[in-house]
Length: 433
Image (tube, rainbow, N blue to C red):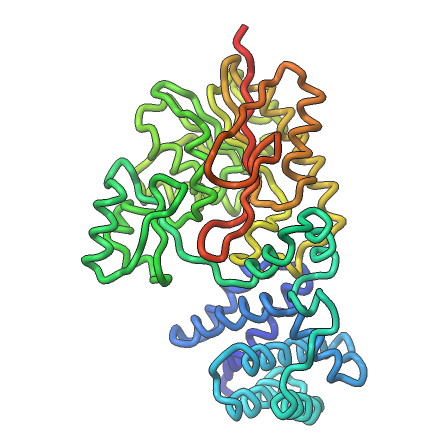
């Protein structure tokens, strides 16, 4: 008997089950996309991202509709029904197609005994409409711990942060300043029929009115522009790069900031980019190759300087530390399912350890930029406060900027539905002797 590929809803259910079991979408979605015909792949991606985005609201509805939870071996059907609910609530897919094809997907997943349940639940959901959210976790479609932590840390902003996290992020470009001015590239976009505007804060940033495939961007393959959020682009405005500097990009993958550093100042002595992940480091090289740039790449734990450091201090260090990524939930909605509150304390310990290690290899008179894509103070200004208590010689620069909120030891950007992601920056200088 010939092999029959799974319907795309069945594939989506398997992807969501993998996310629930701890895989990120970036890990489990690419092989799933390869199971489908090219014309079905955009729909699968939209469904997987959308269901993760609204998971907590959809899951609350489904649990209300089920008399009892499904057995663990049947858990994939729970996710199949979440996919269908997402389509009923948030897509323009015809209702009859959602109902009929979800039942067929249930059979394709080798669960024919559950087709009656699936059909009954979805017909009731279609007939009765979405129920009122039972709590703030369902209302804002975030895990309860994240809602409460944001409410505590940002009493005046928590609802706006949660709402922003549920929006689809804009597509933002960084113009390669070695190749084009921003105004020149805006003109090229206009000629290509792509509507865009300059970003407010990043000097080389352009925000598109609507996302487009990168192969539609003029000279993308030749290194004219890169896709990078405006908040992430701001790192180069804080490094004060000068010709002859030796620069370290610690925790560099996938390489957007490494490339931005090289584009900002074309006469640097050397840029060293380090990442612990053997899987992610080739992405850095791919980006460098496309932009015709060069950096020294090393696979290592940046904090373990004995593994990789050659003894030559750095004039500038960008330390974009591993973090909860709670400032980029809108781009990575699977964070809502993957992250745990118990992750934050260990992450803070890693962040402080990295900061200590990088300080040791910063040249006197040098500058270190600390960055996260988190909105939790525990990973941001409190880390800087802890570090300054340990290193009383460190000089904290006052960032008098027109972006973000002044946190005394740095500036915090909160996610903006019409603009940048959530990000934190602090700048430290080591006194010259």
